[in-house]
Image (cartoon, rainbow, N blue to C red):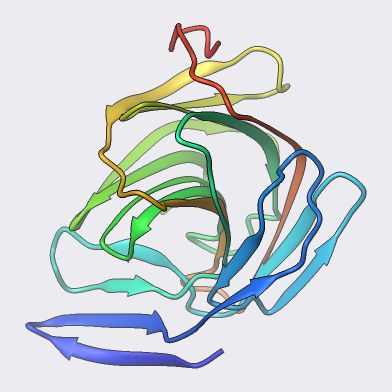
Length: 219
């Protein structure tokens, strides 16, 4: 991985210069994948895969305009215009801000990151970051387990985020408008902004191209 760092108007910007198409078979997702920022390690399992992020990897554009980075490893695919994606995310919460996430991305300045991360108090936290030039960092509920279930639904220009402790009963976390560009990408991210690495397991993956009718039910 080769990153370029630029100091621009007080912002520190990190980005990867290349994206690489990869042949990865993930059951249930009939689309080719592309890496943005290669991981430290990557491996597949029967129903999912593991991404290991290296040190100082993150995806965030600070409202203070002093920290701007997009160097976390992201495994992305071009999604359908409407879809529902659900999966489980598991990691060890070893370091502050360690996390695994679902990402919806137009470009490096316009994206959504739905993350399960270790927060500034050490809690296992459901976090959603909506970025339209600048990141809106929203901390939601704290959880007890190392594993969480996430679901993301796109219905036109409306995005709905859900979480669950068991993958059966879902809680609506966030419901918002986002006008993605044609060709937007969806996928999976691991980050370790202050640690040496973070290994994130993505499992129980389900993807269906459909438009939900009821955001509260997620169906």
